[in-house]
Image 1 (cartoon, rainbow, N blue to C red):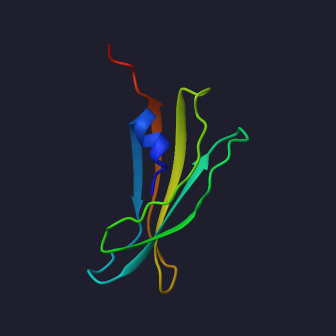
Image 2 (cartoon, helix red, strand yellow):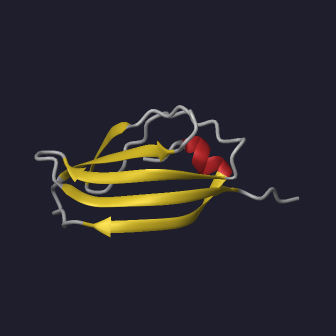
Length: 99
């Protein structure tokens, strides 16, 4: 559930994952992503439902042209009871233009 703009213009630099519990094959999960920033950048965050690991992407706007790296917080939870499955943080750096 990453904004397409970030995937187009950045590459993953660091990922940190903290597993809390397992989910089962038929469990429905919510994947939440939010921009971690001290700036006033705007991003839509919220539940992007998925089942069996197939993410449903939502349109989100990020204007990150003035920053070299951006960080996102990720949260995966069971849809039916809200129990946390996984928590993570990713750091994305601008892609180097190839000539």
